Amino acid sequence: MGKNNLKICSDLEDIMPPEYRELVASATYGKENRGWKDIGSAKELIEEHSLCAGCPEAIAFRYVLASLPNPEDTVMVGSTGCTSLVFPHVAVHNIHSLFGNQNAVASGLKRALKLRFPDREKDVVVLAGDGATVDIGLDMTLQAWFRQEKFTTICFDNELYANTGGQESGLTQKGFVMKMAPQGKQFNKVRMPEIARESGCAYVAILTVSKPNLVERVLKNAVLIARTIGPTYIQIYTPCILEIGKQSMEGLQEMRDAEGPNDRFAFREFITDEAKAFLADMDEKKKAAAAAKIGTAAPAGVK
Image 1 (tube, helix red, strand yellow):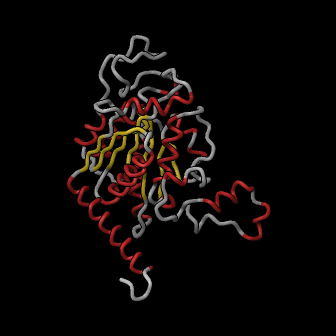
Image 2 (cartoon, helix red, strand yellow; image 1 turned 90 degrees about the horizontal axis):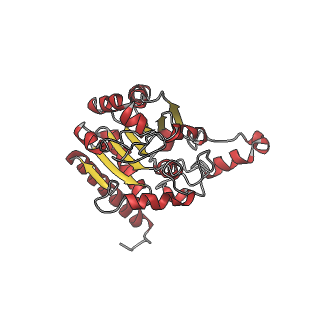
Image 3 (cartoon, helix red, strand yellow; image 1 turned 120 degrees about the vertical axis):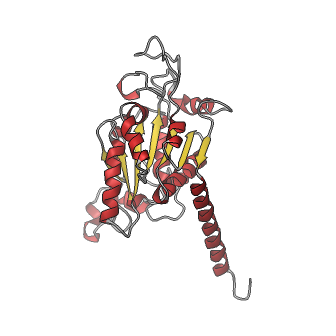
């Protein structure tokens, strides 16, 4: 995928579907500083989807796609769930794994890409729900971190099984009552960010998608750190408004309510010392490049 590959033969231009022509013209591949502000103008950032109206997962998916630092060299690994309905609409290479084994698939994929493209950086990003990440796929999630596999794991935390009728998951809040858990959750929400930290992740963040600037920064940090240092983990609250009894326009407020001070989705970030040094060095290089641009653009004789 990329601008070099995403071209239309001039002889076939007039017969290509207008949607595809627009995709080629507006794709953000190769664009410097691409980000969430491209949503609405770039067709590959999920113009349409088959999820419920107002679904926070659809918002989160758009932000994730827009924030990938190098989408033309990125492969996403998904798992069974609501997100698997969206991947067919995504103009980024992706693989649909079996339920729960997404981190195992990503491990092999990352190693194979390194062998196949030794001189080219290929990012692998896992995207799965709380059932695939924390319940059924926990062993493979942890083993990838133990092995220090260099890819990013994103958990869309619905706090329940949204795709199959509203059963409780390990990430459901204690006491929460659902259609298929009428007695309420009997134990506390699994502390997955802490587990990720203790399992060797170099960067861990927990947040909602109510602040797109924050999602973009966190996602880029996670992918770039994973390239060089080791596994990274992001847990994003994407409530299933259908299963928790909210209206389609209430998803954003639900996320805001969950990210208050000391609440379960108050923004938290863990960065190892090595990862901090990496980010600091990256910032210095960006500043130097920006200063060089300004110097190049200055009129002759002006310093």
